Length: 175
Image (cartoon, rainbow, N blue to C red):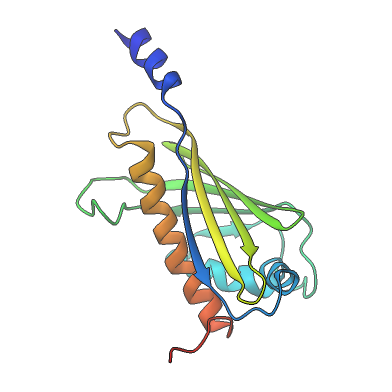
């Protein structure tokens, strides 16, 4: 029976969740430069909702450049916003971020799920920040489909990045 379930999970095509944020960046280059500087990640860790974190680099002393990869390790009780009553224990999360041309790629792992997040600016006159999330592996005890988790996590990342970009002045003013 278990062999059949494992075989069946290999046949299911991987899904990908994607959302975009409209920004006030003037170019894709400006977006990448902003997203890859220490101030962006310093603001990002403020939204982890935990004080129990470590960084592989001292972002206070590296004013101009980040030496990739950047590793963020923290303990947190994660929740799926669509299932807030689901009992999930506090667990260690490891985020490894790397720059690959015009993409910022994050490999995020917990004991239950491993996923890849890609941040990529696109557009010509209006620059958007596209956020893609994809589960690369999942513990069999996780009861939800990959798509449900990816959509939920992608939306949570969108909320955090929107707030970081808004605090940094890179979200257009509402009319």
